[in-house]
Length: 491
Image 1 (cartoon, rainbow, N blue to C red):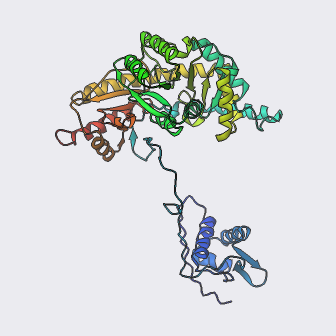
Image 2 (spheres, rainbow, N blue to C red):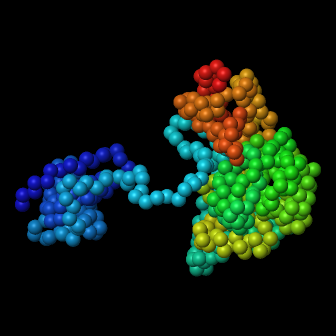
Image 3 (cartoon, rainbow, N blue to C red):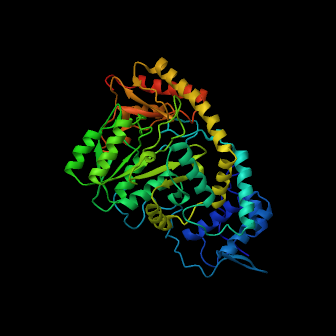
């Protein structure tokens, strides 16, 4: 049978896509472009295999897949043809080979402004304080997960479950908060989330009505800022000093405006790492009682403290149930595990559960049970001690490197805890230009302006050190030095 269609299929031998799927995709594209119309005869499997220099079984597999999807039909004695049931596509009506960049419909205005660093080959990143996932006890975690998966399967417990999360992990987290952080909770006060960011988003949904004022520190966590904005809040910024949130300025603001909530990171202020002292904590509680606002405490890396025992959270001294406490196990174990939680009065948890059902029915029950088991047998505690030692060494190394290599360019105060250093440029530089210069040196930085509620210029960068080993830290600081030296005089 005469088949006038010339073979236009390019097989890429080194592609990760199987060859038979490359053939499938190529033929579908030809059909959609109109070059192969309904009823067109395709080459025989032997003929196409010879022209592409592939095994005939590969072509047979490709044709079988096309037939299963309805693109072609096979007739036993005649061959394989483009399906007659396809819509007619004219030869000049070329469908795009790729999805268009812009949809044919409008998007809602107001995209969140959240800076993010994506991994790139051969590029180092000073992130915002991520852990080193190479330190995760993957074998222990895998055994616990397999054990939990088998146990839940035997109990027929892998179906829909409590949206708040597994009872075992909520109980374990409640006990941890009570024993280690001074809270007074039960499992009914805990709602598990897929990371602390989901907990922040849920909290914004719970608290904010459109037009409400939410107070944040002038430099703060961008995804939290955008979550409250997305909920309809008007963000009011309060300045920081060497001791964190200026509570005197907060009081003046409360006398001018009705404040719905105050979001802050008192343990290791994000991004500057400073610790809110006891006198300001007491004044904050007094203002909350006087003006009736909620306190949202994001304790994102409580475990990582190096010089002394961590100060207890605000929630440990909450006299009236005004604090919604947000924590996470993701930074301790791995961000990919997505394990955050809310601790709050039961009425808040019940409402959070209802909101949670709108976006995520539940998490991974097997993973939650596995982590609960690791907590129970002490493995999480042992892992914490192991990584604290490693991170303490990296903290000392980056401090030494910054003092030795970059003393002429920046200043910093070595934080008592956390996984990042807040570096301030002296003399001032054009930070956005520095970010671009660093990119050319194969180093990623987040500009300080990304942490600003007002978006103003900030003469600083947050240098996360925990995710980089000793050699990577040395190379990252060297690349930062090279980028700074290439800036024009005066920034």
